[in-house]
Image (tube, rainbow, N blue to C red):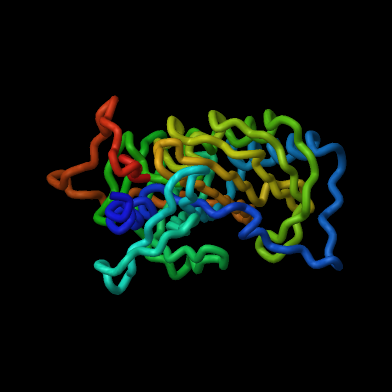
Length: 308
């Protein structure tokens, strides 16, 4: 039974769920010769400055920011639970390997945020377990756009209005709540510096609330996401948020633990960003995805029922 779930479900989980290796596995080491930028004030003060910067960038007249989302998923054996059966990729009839940990895969997205809305483009991997993915070479898949108060979705054949936008890491609600997430994060403390986009950034660990980042796992997954430990916020020399990391657990799986790590990188170009137009439009006769039932039956395979 477990074998069937993995042979037919690992790809499904990887495409739908997103994310998972522990943060320590993908952290970029800091050479001793480099030091984090010296920022004024306490960690709490520094998060407030970062929150103000995001608020200004997304307020009327702000220049906005661009972002990249990388998420990885890893399946773990529960304490006292069965090992994970991994089928032979060449010979499905061969005896499967029994392991305690399986890297499932990941998802990618990039986009931009302006005072008028946001654009998010999901991309197909591959997402290596440890190395940085080549997002420029990743194939575009689903996309979301909020512009002039209207939400659009593109499944690859054109844009149409929707109330079910895809996404990982960020959505309209999470973008609006970023300043609150930073200001309200509790017990902030300085931690080991990080390298972000080739530059050393100061890092702060603080306990954030999933309610202030509802799409941090993926759009529509808040009800079955559990935050594990503090979030990590990386700040550049100007005190701007340049990276956000969160490690989570998908609570829908009963036999195994699926850990999900989301890493969002923020960039602040000097020029004002402009959202794309929802062109081309999807022909009216093309079927549109609809919202799932309000109370869906539990998935016996433990997989996600709603794609991001």
